[in-house]
Structures are given as C-alpha cells and as structure tokens.
Length: 59
Image: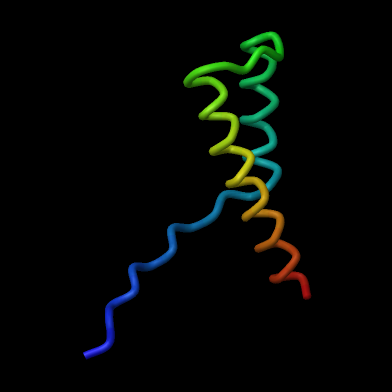
C-alpha cells in the first residue's frame, strides 16, 4: 500500500504574508532576535513558497 500523503495546507498569498512581515518589522523597530527572528524566518519561507506557487499558477 502506498504511503498516504498528507494534504498540503493552503498557502496564503504572498501579499498577505508580506503584510505580516512588514507589521512584524514595524512592531520590533526592525530588530529581530530570539523568537522574533524565528517568526520572521518562518514568514520569509512562507512568502517564498507563496511567490513560487503564484508563479507556477500563472504559468
């Protein structure tokens, strides 16, 4: 029996993720460390995935 693949969670738009990144940077005054840095990196990776998905969908 083939392994079951878990469904990919729906991606937010790149614009939505960008908005959250900007809010995070504004809230921290641009200083990213500890959990804030980790959250930024998660958002950055989500943004990259969203951009790739939008490009693939458009093509």
